[in-house]
Figure 1 (cartoon, helix red, strand yellow):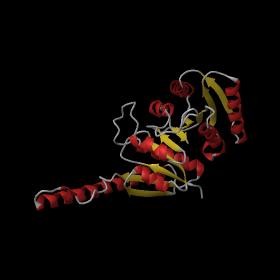
Figure 2 (cartoon, rainbow, N blue to C red):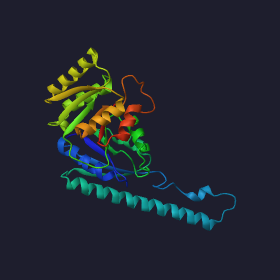
Figure 3 (cartoon, rainbow, N blue to C red):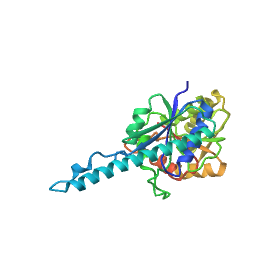
Figure 4 (cartoon, one colour):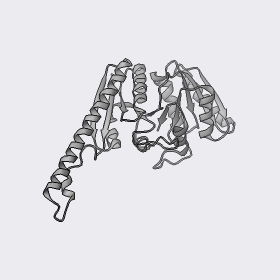
Length: 283
């Protein structure tokens, strides 16, 4: 059996897109899907709130607070189950039969870390239900998950559209080389049009790197185009996606010149913010 795909859904506008994208991935790879909805510790019940009242607070108030806390947790769980059932219906309507539902309490990153063994990919929306949808706002959980994940992270755009053309950002770094190899080997990308692009000044080293990337893709059965564009990476890549009609961007989460730190690379962050198509991030 193929390794599972983990998809994270919430009440945001991105959840439907996540469902369609995970169904597309499952349909091409034959992988089972696990849909997760994670309740925060407050939503899942924070224990007996009566313990927070001191200094002679009346027993009646303490009891009412405890009852309200329990009721709120119960409603959050019911909402979580409804979100999962709705998500399953979308995925099933797209033709996926192996779909498991997982309702969890706690921290979303801890949940992903615990569950990603045996997973080939994690799918998440660009923004969560708490986001204000400002253009420069990223879902806070997204960056945390990208930092913690050991498998590729598929960041779904707000709306699903069929994926036919893939743009691979290549800077010669380890994660970029992994991205090329991943596209070459994975049935997810079989039959898709591939372009490998480097942003920067042309040089012999850059050209050799692109030819090596092209050869790797050719060995995997892909007819790839390579190109060099000048300008700032985040701007140039976004413009290329728009101008040439690419449907998916694949890139390393870290540039080759950046020490792996507590935040994902600034170019990567900017690309996720501004790019209108889904992004696959390789570590």
